[in-house]
Amino acid sequence: MSDHLTVVTHPLVQHKLTLMRRRETSTAEFRRLLREISQLLAYEITRELPLAHRTIETPLTEMEAPVLAGKKLALVSILRAGNGLLDGVLELIPSARVGFVGLYRDEETLQPVQYYCKLPDALEDRLVIAVDPMLATGNSSAAAVDLMKQAGATNIRFMCLLAAPEGVARMKEAHPDVPIVTAALDKKLNDKGYIVPGLGDAGDRMFGTK
Ligand code: URA
Image (cartoon, rainbow, N blue to C red):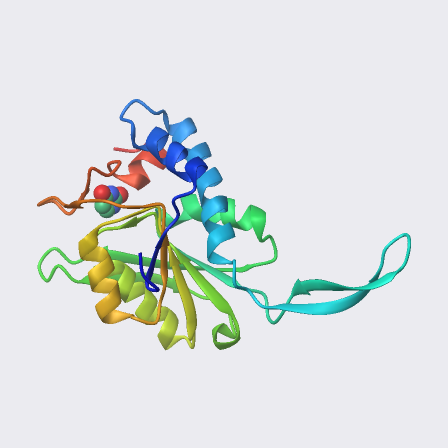
């Protein structure tokens, strides 16, 4: 645990994550658990959001009540697995603006190549939460954050379900200013780039593909 990496050790998060990791967990159950965990991670990642005060009237009296300050925050889903985290976070923060970044890996250069990028405007004035369940090599996450910074974002946080030490190191090197919030830091990557012990291919498990 450091300023750069927060592992959310809340027992509910840990219990739900264990259920998600199990081979026999169905697609429907996996999706439901992912939505629930995404909301608990969002609770953690938004803990320091600034508040302003607004005058409201309760049925009894007037009061100065806290509300979120500043421009609506932006959620950026890294396709396609990011969408599994996005849905839950949007339920919690329904007025958030939403962007999508699509990257694939060039099999010759092994570098991420952008195939889609649509981001909300005024990113420089918003807290941007990038969501991708699996921080594996970190190459595509670092490239996605590059795109957000090129579009003006200066205040970015990265939310994932599982992180590998290799991915955390890659992100720290490329984007030391982007804090990572995750439910677990696993042991390693295998030679195919899967997180071990992990949970398999997050996209396949949430969408029921193979
Ligand atoms: N992406 C996944 O879906 N799973 C991994 O283990 C690594 C990357």
